[in-house]
Image (tube, rainbow over all chains, first blue to last red; front, top):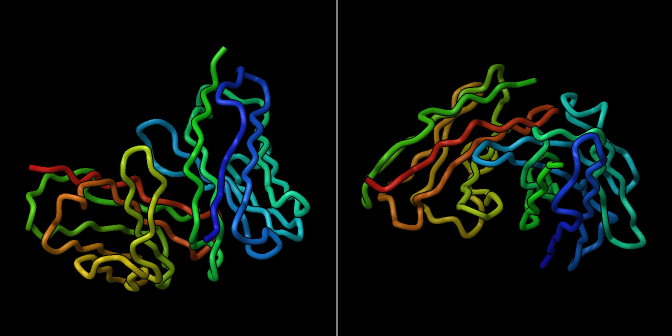
Length: 118
Length: 107
């Protein structure tokens, strides 16, 4: 059974960089696409972007200037960096695996809360 | 970007009721639509994919229909565990986009 677990600081200061890691267990990261999604408090879901194990990435244009997603196949992990954060970036951040159909997620992490606050 | 508009944003219903949630895409997405159920403090769970296909293990009281721009999620004979928030998501093109959600509450 594939499992995903997000990790990283729960508190980030405005203008700094948010950094999260998703560790994949029960399966290899060297297949599929791997995605980050976020959900601000009380609001809906926003797709952030994906990374393929080959290193190919695709980002939401609304975040593209500030975001980068990378993969570390040796550690079976992928990571999110979001630069120059503001209070609007406060959210639950989820990592997920794209299944047989890209864009359709079959496994999700439990989510991690990140608060942007000085 | 493809905008996904869900309605209603919330509804109240009783156990045993049948409810319908609609999702409209701002442009055609064929049948590349999935429905999620989300409970508080939990990740979304996929119920339906390709507009009308039930995910493995999902009860048959959930059904989906539609293609192009208009889609529906129907829950027949609501059960206590069905009170949650439901989202649609298109995966026809990037950026992937979600509907705003429909919160189903107990009447």
